Amino acid sequence: MMQQPSHSDRDETLARRIGQLREAGQPLHTDPELRNDPLGRALLALADEVAPVDQPARRERIWQQIAMRMHRQAADRMPQRPALKRRPRWRRALAVAIVLLAAGLGWWLHLLREAAPVLVASATTTRQVYTAPDGSHITLRPHSRLYLLTHADKVLRYRLEGEAFFEVVHRPTRQFQVEAGPVRVTVLGTRFDVRTWSGVEVFLEEGRVQLEGPAGQRQVLTAGQRSRLTADGHLTSPEPASAEDYLDWMQGRLAFTQEPASQVAAELAHHFGVQITLPEPYASQTLSGTLLLDSLEQTLEDLSRALGGRFIRIAPGHYRFEAHAVR
Image 1 (cartoon, helix red, strand yellow):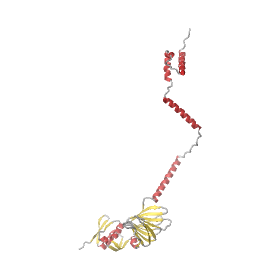
Image 2: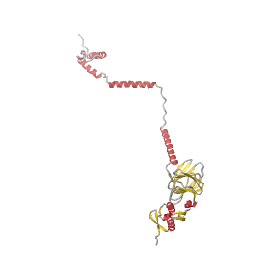
Image 3: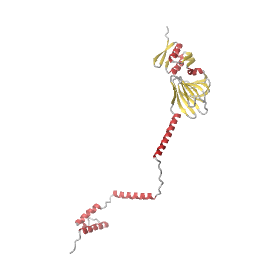
Image 4: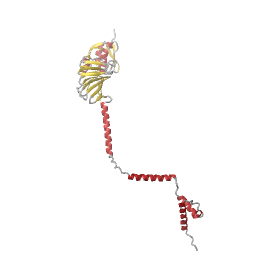
């Protein structure tokens, strides 16, 4: 009596049959032995689930893995570069701070040497004396301002608004310059007065100065000479002038000889920081004399007596001359 094969033997036989068909490249579902056997059909279904699927995405992933492996192998064969030493973070931060500090210091020095004007001295109701870095002394008339423009090894340059008397220390290696409106005064060592409140005027008491006008005109003043800037922007030829006419304010008085009353009023207006209106024909009247600059009220009273009238206050800081009524 023949012995029936066991269930496990049958499974092994059918599984081996599936393997043979796969190796031969034959379709599994056309085999009658597998299709007609219940166990064979179950094995066919299982083979479909576990069979590898030739999908393009899967092939792409395989080639990427192969390429990466080849790249790693090539890199392993290349000589290794020595590792760069990284600076500690605190050293990098210190280096950055030093660079920023140097840049900031350079920027600050640039501003000091070639920058916007810096107000270094200002006189309100009294005279003010300013000592420059080179030891020169500058006396500012009331209501005047002095600005530093350039402080360099070869030039020290200021701008004046108002009036000031300069006593410049002689230094051959450095030029001392003053900008008064469009006029530039260059000196090496001298004493001179500059005013800008009624046009630009320069009076030289001692030494030599060079003037340069807006049109490029240049001239040299010697002691006891003055020059003015005309309305059309030209410098007048140097001419003799009295030191008292320009330096009297430093002694607290105003001296004038055959001076138009309008010029006297303009100088008083600047000195006291007010506005003075002097109508014609009194503005054109010439005056000679001396006015003390102790107080605005007393000075205006003295001037009004010379003109034959009085000054009245028509607004804060604004005075107008009125002649006495004729009886």
